[in-house]
Image 1: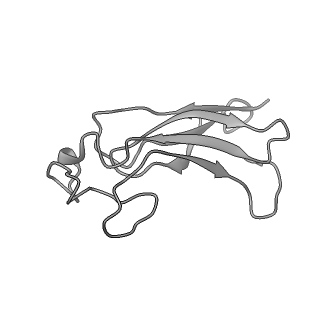
Image 2: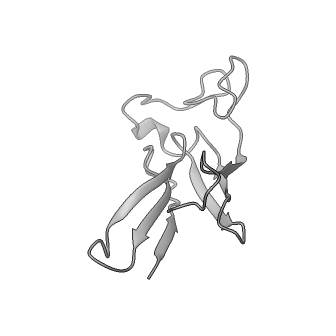
Length: 114
């Protein structure tokens, strides 16, 4: 019984598909994956780590707005400091995109993935 967690790191994709996937490993849904957390365009996800009680999940988002954004149809050009593909995580004018560590929790405080 359980779930396999898969962090994707596709530097050349230029899509918004990178992130964390949950793959069922048992029962009728075995082999079925769900996109659990998506990174901003051009970013990769690394280092997922659950707390011992499974109530918090830490993930690292690398170089948002960087990799492959020329291939992303909604941007389709090289990202620059003045014209980034995203301003994640602040989304404020004049702030560049920044790598960050994100903590994911459930609204009800329960275990992640249940």
